[in-house]
Amino acid sequence: MSFSSVRSILQHTRRIAQVNNGLMFNSIRELTIPIVVEQTGRGERSYDIFSRLLKERIVCVMGEINDHVASLVIAQLLFLQFENQKATINMYINSPGGSVTAGLGIYDTMMYIKPEVSTWCIGQACSMGSVLLAAGAKGKRHALPHSRIMIHQPSGGMQGKASDMKIVADEILRLKSSLTKIYVKHTGLSAEKIDASMESDHFMSADEAVTFGLIDKVEQPSIN
Image (tube, rainbow, N blue to C red):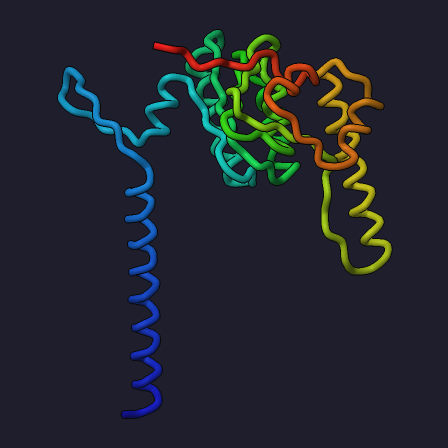
């Protein structure tokens, strides 16, 4: 068998593997995202669970906040505004945080749209997750009893020329200043208090988050 034939076989094998990996990923995705079936006047209609929740004006911010997650959340917020500018949007958050710029994109959209956004912490709202939690409409910021909330200052890795490192350091300080102003706006605390709390990872229980001003209420489970 010639070298070119062997190479062709290897290339073909790689293509098959790539296709199989794609099919496997799609299959896993389909298995992990539940489908809800509803009866309508025209018969059955199926939704993935997140689309069904969106129909009820519920937006989920789950997992790490990155550009992809931000684009989905922003699109949903804008869609719900165009549907109804008066009805409240409920945002459920379970996030360890993530990209500051991606999170600020969601934050700015929450401030821009006309509907009030009610925020709910389920599990955790850390770092940028806590910013979004605090940004909910006053009186409509909630956490479940065993949630944890954490605030801290932004961080970032630096390497390269000294001038480049200074640029990055200055940008991190600028972002820190922006986050401080946001926390001050939504908690009513002083900038000095916020800066001191952000010096290191500052974890809070749901009750402590109420005292801090990040949320308004701890939702207790109903007893049937």
